[in-house]
Amino acid sequence: MGKQFPASELKRDESLKVVDNRTGKEYTVPISHNSIPANFFKGIRAAPGPNDRPEDETERGLRVADRGFLNTAVIESRITYIDGDNGILRYRGYPIEQLAERSNFLEVSYLLIYGALPSSSQLSHFTSEVLLHGPIHSDAEGFFRSFRYDAHPMSMLTSAFAYLGSYYGEANPSLQGQDLFTKAAKGDPAALQNMDRQIFRLIGKATTLAAMAYRIRQGRDFVVPPIGMSYTESFLYQLDHLSPTDHLSELHSNKPHPVLAKALDILFILHADHEMNASSTTVLQTGSSLPDPFSAVSAGCASLYGPLHGGANEAVIRMLLSIGSPENVPAFLEAVKKRQKVLSGFGHRVYKTSDPRSFIIRKVADEVFAVTGRDPLLDTAMALHDAALKDDSYRGSFPMDFFPVLFVVPRVVGWVAHWRQMLSPSGVKIWRPRQLYLGPSARDYVPLEERMGAFQVGVGVEPSVIEHSGMTKRRKLAEAAGKVRSKL
Image 1 (cartoon, rainbow, N blue to C red):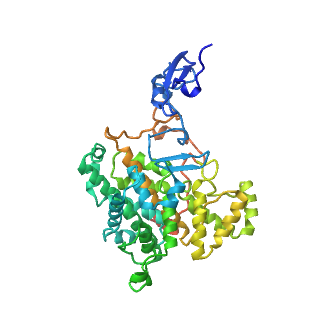
Image 2: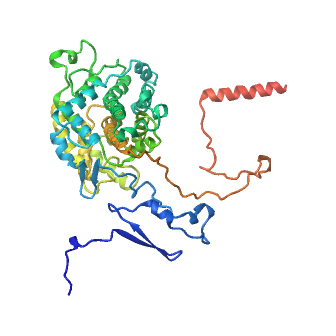
Image 3: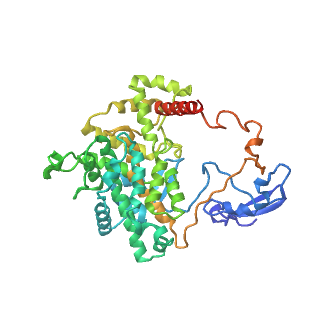
């Protein structure tokens, strides 16, 4: 008998054998990091079969179909790791629980962007630069005041990030050359300095733009970021400062309550990054065409706005308001079971067990409500949690439509970390996914006068008939009356 080796000592063949039953050919696909290269399948070709259409491009190789990117790795990353089955979230290898308990948001930001915990001098420099870049050009006041009084703050914030890009031509590869930031990846000092300046601007101004979106809804003047406060203290100050005579402006009591500032700091840590989520992917998809980083972040902001992503927080608050009180929870859940209502914000698609952030949020919530008093919606949320087993939401004291904004501010850090990582020395390959075309095959154009009736009739396949305002109706009546008079 030969010597038996432990499985751990045996060298495995890290490959996958695939047999194409259409041709009988066998292929060996390399496995690396438990993944296979999708591009390999382009080499698996066959002659068109009886059920193939020309648009299937059978002879050009197999395509990999993955609607919604449920099992597609689009990038190699060293930033965030999620194990959804076991409820694990780590930034650069550090458990989120340790960072939330022992670190602060700007230190975690440094970690996510640059890959290691900073020294005291490195953190001091990074913090100073971020806070120094908080103020924004005075013209931004006119920009924000151009929005309607009831504009959604996410509409304002999405536009504002793109607006920032108009100020900084040195950050635009379209103006400075497409190797503007890839030179930074090669170690060019001037390019690195330029890249870092944009990172400081985006993180520093995120709170300023968010506060401006908040205050325009409140009908209040804008506030210049204060000196001598932490990142979250500055944000809360910009939200709540009233006037030069307000008690917050007095030297002995100018800082927001420390419990609130610490709670917001922890929440920012928890939401700074979450791997390849919809908005991070959007930032990278946009960034792959090499626009300025402000445009890429604006695209991420728009993605996060949706109710299936960051907008879910707002949907939760609206749901809790519709429930009203804890005694209405059982009836609401019965309606959910009958598919008459939708249960929003309970759990996360990635986590099969509990979201590790939810336990930290609960603890922080208790500390906040100890100084602010209990929010009535919290009682409803907790009653719903007891019945549905999951929830990590509480309202605090912000308008419901401001919740996605509170999500964006810390997530800017994750976005720029992924954007910075994508800019490799060898350049950036534009993200251009394939599709499976199932539409009509080639056909000839039919002139309008030769068409016998409509080609397609029905709901969804022709333009809808929409209701118009009274002004439009009156204009159409006037036009019709004018045509009648012209015939008389």
